[in-house]
Image (cartoon, rainbow, N blue to C red; front, side, top):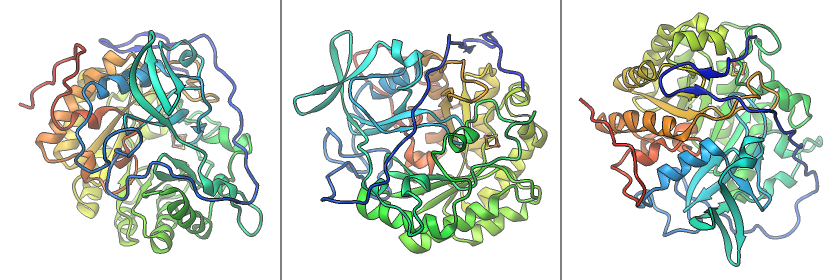
Length: 436
Ligand code: SF4
């Protein structure tokens, strides 16, 4: 697989290369649970990315602090140095590595372990009563890192640690239910993906069963306040591309824990599969085109490019009919050399048909074919957000309306913080672009 070439490939959209990559360490924890459940941020179902950490009361309508979107975009671009340990996502399907925290009470994932993050101007420090984010000695926001979830100390009757079955991504239970992919290790491997890394490092198991996931979901809900489940899968060499298995896993979670569930899969060869997924009671689906620039898609995800961007639109049309407007989302990854105009146009066309484009910066995963890159510059990312978010809002879509999954959580993007109005801090911001 050809790696993305460093250099300026489109207006304002450099593919940023770094010098090297840090090794990541495996998560640990197999001891049986003892002791009381500690207090931790939990927003409850439907509360979106807002949580009670270090801010004002957690409600679904809480005001967004001035400048927060800009700060999170900066952190997701430059990374965050940390002087305290924190829970991280390492590897997994899609663009994955991240530290997880609440910033002024809002969920966020930011690069913390990559080499470029070690040079970030932003640092998280422990304070007398909590944590803060600083730049040049100035305190910018309250921070609360995700503490190790309590359910991680449990294991199944046959000895599989719960954390190898599903992780807690802030308030969402997340699992890659089939940790292998038909494209991994061959010319079709997506260059940003790390699905095989986690498996090779022994941090997960190859296949999670619906029964395992149901058991873990109940514990994550009861012990750590999980409010939904986000399930993805490696692609299988079957006509459904793995959609039906991940949906059966989601069905088991819904029935056992009552949590809303998003499942993610590639467009199946037969679109009737999407209706079958809906019939299992799944709340939301993610069908990820990754890039609206066909040249970039061909370079970073050759198998998805064969489906073609129009193939994604056909799948989304069927999915919106089955799940409803706003319950279908797609990742749109920035920083892979894409044309910004094609990107914004593609997002707007998706929005017009009821699809939520979840725009995120590339987060190079150690062990992926893009591990030598860095995240895109925040100014570029923020400029795209500011052309997409108002368009979403003007058409009545938004993160608050998504039942489950990445577009509900929103921690990997700053876009939803711009959906309402502006962001009126002391800083200089790029203008919101009109929705004509
Ligand atoms: S389809 Fe691409 S992103 Fe998804 S698991 Fe396979 S290689 Fe990773």
